[in-house]
Length: 324
Image (cartoon, rainbow, N blue to C red; front, side):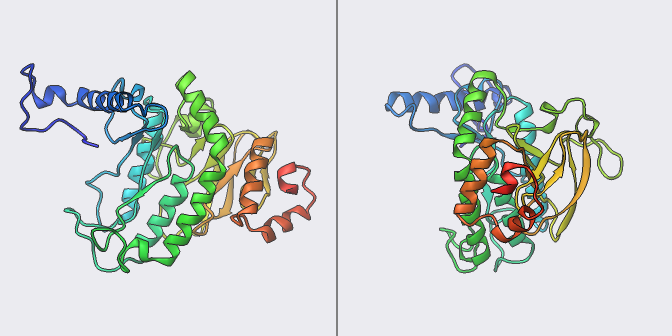
């Protein structure tokens, strides 16, 4: 998992660290791929690399986007946004299997020393990070804090809410297995990322091609991402938010948690307001058999609230998913 060539390294060809800064990531990935092949595990094993350059994706099983270490440790939401922007922009850079491991100690100060206790903004940031990660190429966590093994009572692994959310989003990730494998296959053939910037599917939509923040300044990413072309996710990147205004691109979209059709097929793009309590971020799906199977799996696991969906079913929406 080395991120770069050592500053004090000596190299057989007389090269310098600065000269190897970019190519090191690809060479490191190539060496790991060769190790898998020589051990006979190529095909049933993979590795993750947090650094990448041209050619890395041809060797690495997945690329990770760690949060910016410069993020203010007192603002766990900054680490969350860094991870989000890393994933969505990596896909536009050709890293087809980008993801970010959920940092279970987002409020740790520089040096890796964890603050006593685990609560407030740190707890919510972890839960929001889990929500986002479940819709990426790889769902994993690291560093629970409060002890070397991360299992102390004051760490994330000792927090009931975090553990419930971890189980909940693990179910969501598993329910998407077949759909995600199809996207991975498409990535290997066409180079299209698993996690996608909405611009890839809606290049004509100015909300994705002309990105500006609240102050009118240009920004590097949209406020949403897509898993393939059937799922549209708006991650909650600010703490304490309970309701959001969400922009939905053209076409009919169904709110995952309630089954409500929020836009119709004739829509050319619309902003809607939705609830976004912890555990139910704004997620929207298309009306098709693949998503019907996804919703059915979540219902069996108790991830989707059947009472909420019953209320919308009684409104007699014609869509199959809403009737499920």
